[in-house]
Image 1: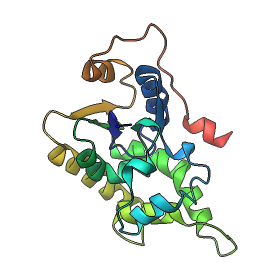
Image 2 (image 1 turned 30 degrees about the horizontal axis):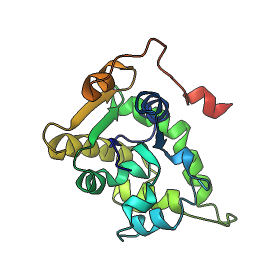
Image 3 (image 1 turned 30 degrees about the vertical axis):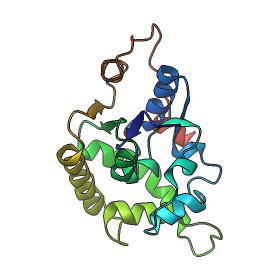
Image 4 (image 1 turned 90 degrees about the horizontal axis):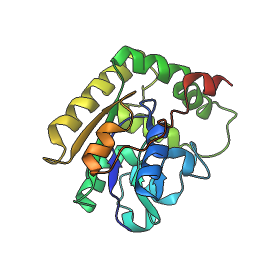
Length: 201
């Protein structure tokens, strides 16, 4: 099964809402960190191979999915866009870098910190993802992650294949997706989910 949509956006940019929206629009499953049984610390051998610099069997790794968003998919959007040359690349983003950092440091960063605690036994895939994104082992720093966010957004915009990039600012709803996929806008509310207060709960 070929992916029709590849999410290049980062965690905490509405990716779980995108997941549910794309499943509604495309009538199939959308890969997301939460669809992995061992998330976020154990993403499975295929993703670990990719995170460690190898090349997994993308068809096998994403078998049964029509789209993919969030990490680990988004970290490999270039490879996936090359593998599925007809797929759209959706770049989700927040209104500002600072807004993204506030969300990230309330949700993902505490989980990543817990993953490196000395007493923790188990996978370290979330740490591998943070290192890959930040470009350094010293990822637990607002300035480092803020610079990485700005760099990531600029690089996706500059290098996504011509005519395939769809920008989806958090809060944009159905319209940008439906326009790009040439589908009617559903007569139902957009499935907003995974808000910051949901993590606290």
